[in-house]
Amino acid sequence: MKEFKSKEFWRAALAELVGMTLFIFLSISSAIGNKNNTSPDQEVKVSLAFGLAIATLAQSLGHISGAHLNPAVTLGMLASCQISVLKAVMYIVAQMLGSSLACGIVYGARPSATDALGLNTLNGVTPSQGVGIELLATFQLVLCVIAVTDKRRRDVTGSAPLAIGLSVCLGHLAAVSCETVECLSSSCALQCFTSISILRCSLITDQLHRLWNQSRSLLWPGFNPEQF
View: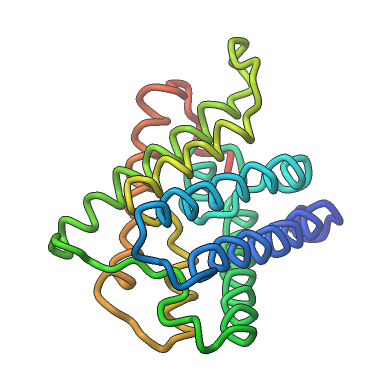
């Protein structure tokens, strides 16, 4: 409970709240910014908006909270023993609140243009196939975050926020979301829980399971559960 009473703990949680609000607001705004949403360049525009937003916010808030801005990333950091359980829970709560706030702002500002609030649809794939695609894309994002922020590495000389931003951009170019909270918040704002929106919840469980096993067997062979 000592961590819970510290100023740095709440400062980091606030950074996640502010960062998530800005990220989702900018991202959704790019997705509904014009009526030409069926044009091929729309995917590029939205992908760049997501990637640039993450890179900018990671550079701006990374020194405060790590700028996770994604429950999957937070659980990846928890599984690799880089944050505590209490901090992970508080981060996810802050991310959900920030995402919901951003969706509410966008929906309130442009109610006539918010048919989906950035929600993806299943075009030509089944729900199970959609989940598989989301799992792989989100896994590459979490893997990138853990890899470029590993303090033991001496070969990472470039910009970690830029690498993470490019990873997010890559996921969206593959026509997936990689952002569980954004999808659920959009669904809440629209009161529309389609199958693909609810299935995003499986991303969290999958990332926790995958990264827990990976960190124990490969990256942290001397793993000690008492660190928690």
